[in-house]
Length: 177
Ligand code: IMP
Ligand code: MG
Picture 1: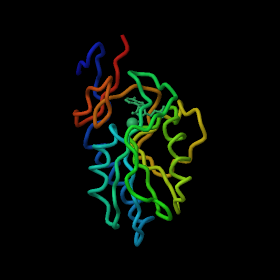
Picture 2: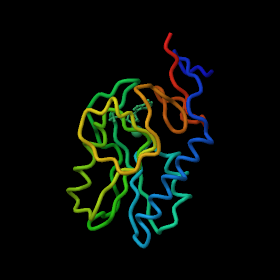
Picture 3: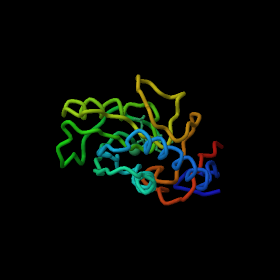
């Protein structure tokens, strides 16, 4: 068990299982993007560890960019997406893969996708480590998802609780008291 601020968390997804799922996801991407040269757009902060592990499995040429939006405060999604760090390169006519840590309500992705599409991309797909399908509130077409989980709050492997806990190798779930 680990303690972060006022909450306790228990082991949930072991890092070996995370690694297996990412390798499987990478296989799909490697098949679909063979011979293409997409741009991966990873969403800071949460996706930094997933993106780092994912790209080391990729066998097609690609570039990676990091962007940052603000939407999540403590344990609730505010629904408001602000751009904090934007794209520094032209993505017109490019295949884009958005790399995200977790899709909860889907609000963040739902707000980001039109911003990318209006830049004239050739294609855009989502590659996400985790999804909570039971919490999705908007229509989202997620082509690449490593794992689905129930409506639980988790930390570790890049995911934080109030800014803390991203460093854990495995994923932990909040222990309700
Ligand atoms: P959405 O906009 O509701 O889909 O929220 C997506 C963002 O909320 C993710 O990029 C995460 O940063 C954050 N988030 C959602 N669920 C969790 C969780 O269980 N733990 C930590 N962060 C989460
Ligand atoms: Mg995030």
